[in-house]
Image (cartoon, rainbow, N blue to C red; front, top):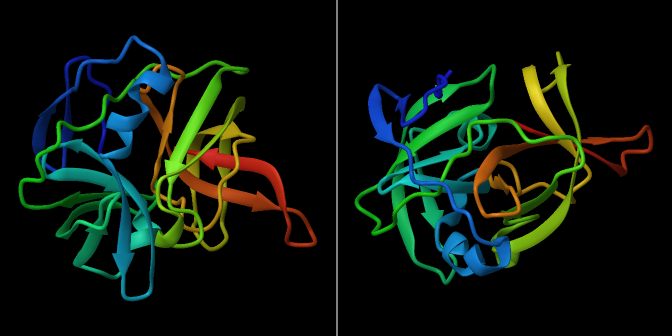
Length: 203
C-alpha cells in the first residue's frame, strides 16, 4: 500500500511525507482553498481527477494513469503542469504523481475512518475537464469489504456512499464536513440496465 497507517507522516513512494494539519472549521469555509488543490488528470486516452497531498505530490487512481509514465494535470482555471507517475498499486487502484513545485500545501488526510451516516463531499471533473471543480454531497452508506474480479480487480475495504460521481471523478477526493480528505473516488456501480444506482465506492 502507498499509505501505511501513521499519525504524523506517511511513507509514500519511498518518501516520508509530513501530514498536513487537519481542518476544524466548516467545509464551506474551506472550499475555495480545497478547489485550488483538486485537479484534472489528462492522458492521451482520457482522464480523471486527482489532488495534492503536499507540494509536488498528488494522488489519483491507477486506472486513470494506467500505461502512462507521464501525464498532464490541469488546475481549476486552466494552469497546467506535467506530472510523472512515480508509484502505483493496481490492486488498491492508487497512483502517486510528482510535478515540479506547484506552490500548494497539500490537502489534510484524515486517517481515522468515517461513520455510517456522516455527511461527505466530493470534488472532481465528472465526464470531462469542462466540468472541473464540480461539487456533490451525500452520506456514508456503509464501510464494507468489496472484491471485484472484473475490469478493475479491486479487493479491500471501501467507503460506500450515495454521493453522485461519474466517469471523470475517478481519483478525486472525498471530504468530511470540515474539509479533510477521508477517501479517494474509485468506482460507481450500476444496475442491470447500466444506469447509476447511487452505490459508489471510495478508497
